[in-house]
Amino acid sequence: MVSNSCIRVVKESLQRTGFIEVMRIELGEAEVRFDLQIISLGFIDELLKKDGFELIHDSSRRLLEKIKTAVIQLVFYGNNTNSLIRNSDYLSDKLGYPYQQLSKVFSEKSGTTLEKYIILIKVEKIKELLSYDEMTLSEIAFRMGYSSVQYLSNQFKQVTGLTVSEYKGQWRERRPLSSLLD
Image 1 (cartoon, helix red, strand yellow):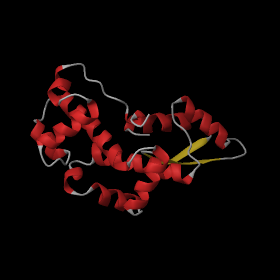
Image 2 (cartoon, one colour):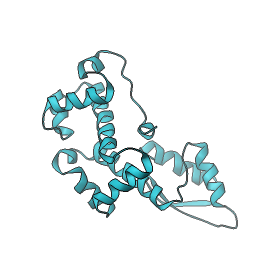
Image 3 (cartoon, rainbow, N blue to C red):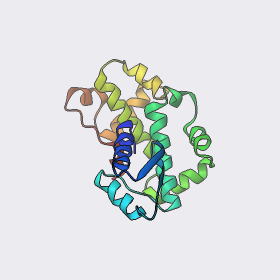
Image 4 (cartoon, rainbow, N blue to C red):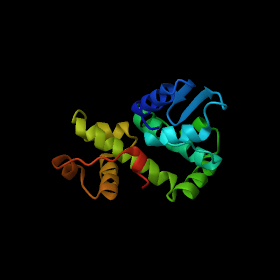
């Protein structure tokens, strides 16, 4: 789950059964109560798959999803936190593991580095901010934690293949955050 809409869909889907009580739900995580005599984990897994979600049983895969969620929270909902603290410090504090361990698990399970993933997420947020056309590029660079507009521009071109001006001047392709590693 990567957005409030995802949370709502999962919650409604689980509650609609009439047999599952949602205790707590947040990005990437849900705590539920149900009777195993009536509902099985397989049933819940199939229910979630209908909406494009899945249960994650493997602990390192679960940590991978928590890392992804924490990065999305930092970049999309951090309200400038990204420019004030280091990504590694934020992730370590948020998840309770040393950054080196988080980075290792992420690389092993996703096939890319954590730093590259953070850049992908930041570029998607930059695309969003550009589409609103409410902030200057300097303001976006500051908000996203870039030391300069040039650094942001170079990274944007490296990831998208387009300059910021080219991107603003044509059809604006944005990708769902859940598919950035696909």
